[in-house]
Amino acid sequence: FCMLTIQPPFIREYFSTTDLPLPKHIFRSFFLSWEDALWHLLQVYRLPNGAVILVPEFFCGNVMDHMEDHGLKVVTYRIDRYLQPIYTHFVAQLHQLQPSVVVIFHSVGITNPLMKRSTQWISSLIDECLLIEDCVHRIINPTTITFSTARHFLIDSLRKVVPIQGSNVYSPTQLPPIPLATNVATLRYRLGVHAWWSMMQFCLVLAYYTKISGWRKRLNSVAEWAMIHGYKLIGAISLPSVGNSVLRRLADHIDIEAVEKTKTWQANRYMEGVKKLLVSGDFWLPRMEVRDYENLRGFPLIMCLTIADRFLACMREAGIILRFELDDSPWSEKQKIVYLPMGLHIHKKDIAFVLNQLNRFSRT
Image (cartoon, rainbow, N blue to C red):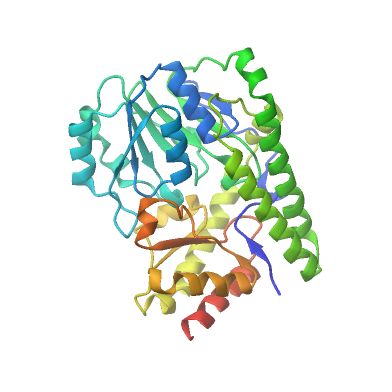
């Protein structure tokens, strides 16, 4: 019996002894979460109440609710069943709404085609617009960053892809720090987020190393419970919070090369192994290129609503702790998506086990 989770445990393999280089023309700030980074940007650039933020349909509904709580007017642009933005609708929204914030989401880590065509629409942004590349599902390599405007920001969410709680913001100019008074006011919130994250990591690490299947099952279940509670807490207050300084320094030592190499192999193995499952038409994959494999948070598998609940129940019963991702998004009302486990904590035998369970489901 195997218990697999998409969340990465705090293990040595994710880290390197060498520092991650930061080019001189790129500035980095570290926050408690992606949402905390956004709240800080709203304060720094003094966006008015009712300012429009344009986000994709495949986006966290809870985060959209928090955006509205912070005075933003949330408008979505369409995403097709293959997780691709519908370009004509996106451009039409830019012209019609003239948003103050535009979010380009690299969903599941797949490079968003809008950024590949940015020269075609970037001139449609108003001068004051904040352009945010949402990189929560991938590790950002600072040496590959290019900025399109003076208010272009890349924001990650490390806890989703490596065992670190916090979010980097990469920008073309240095952001002012969060005021001391604000950091004092958010102390309780910050401690709560770190407490839930620490509990999750404690259980994930024990589950990773234990050989007793019963203990592994229980520990991974508690880890998932702690993760969900931490998610509910993040971004729920009005003020932004700084990230932990120790975790910030640890983020300098992420072994990006090891993660990318491992995920490329894993994605190729999944791609070959799901072919039989895709024949029925009940399942399909997002559009992605081979170069995207190294950036994937997990291997994305999309399915129709008619079989989704049965599939999820079968996988979780087998010990593969999947969830419908961004299940509260408008996109997820028409189909569901799961991320098959990837990362340095997932081994070849684990991939084989997942594929075996997928093949068993395809025969039912």
